[in-house]
Length: 121
Image 1: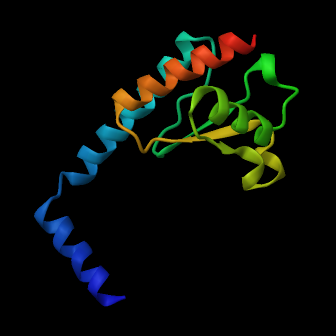
Image 2 (image 1 turned 180 degrees about the vertical axis):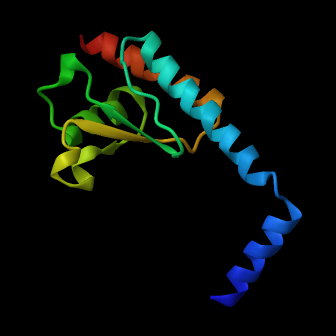
């Protein structure tokens, strides 16, 4: 689609540092999420070059299916994640966080997750 190609060329020529700026924003969000979850005992490897974080379901909840655990987070923590099974059988046992919120909202989500998992433990 030619108009999109032209717009892409203009954007690359007019704002060559923009991709680096966006990468920094997502790196900050990733670090806020992964480091924050680590502080509450949920260890997740830091992904590189993505706007998603795949997290194994915490050990204490490992018997739960990913859809059940995702519903628990919505209900108890008011945090929405994607159940891993939605991406195929290999996704079972995981949930996927999207790094679409700012760091303040990510910290708020971590507080909600901490409260929910502590309450249910």
